[in-house]
Image (cartoon, rainbow, N blue to C red; front, side):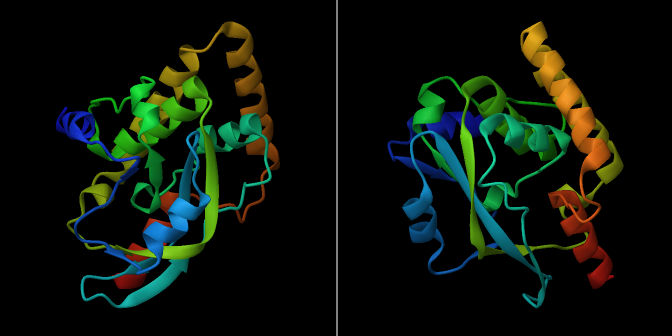
Length: 203
């Protein structure tokens, strides 16, 4: 996979995953670096802009910074799909074997990586409660095409990662995931809902 090849050739301390049609705010990198450590992926809130760079809305991620690792992982399994373009990832994770998998649906690569990091390498996640990027949406964007198929594929990824855990841990996650789905607030949103709102606003 070309992404892993590029990572293997890199010698920096952090990986900034970013799309060419998005925009970094001037303080983005410094703010992320100030909040990251070797076993934490940091991410932030983000603004949604249209094809003409018009600000449409701000998407505020749910703040799970106070949760224990297990409880955050439950929310990640439920679909807390962090916008990968906001993240800063420690390069040491890749040296530990936490690689990016080549999978059928390219839109799910980042979610697969996050599940891999959280469930199998005990990596933490930390939200910077500030918009640090402008995320551009447009009708031809890959992440917005065939969204039903993508959501179905994400469900498969969830099952695959759970199946790699030992039976006791897998049962515990499944039980807590079901409990969380029954009790979570209706106001809880994930990345997909934020993008969908943005698309509807622009149409």
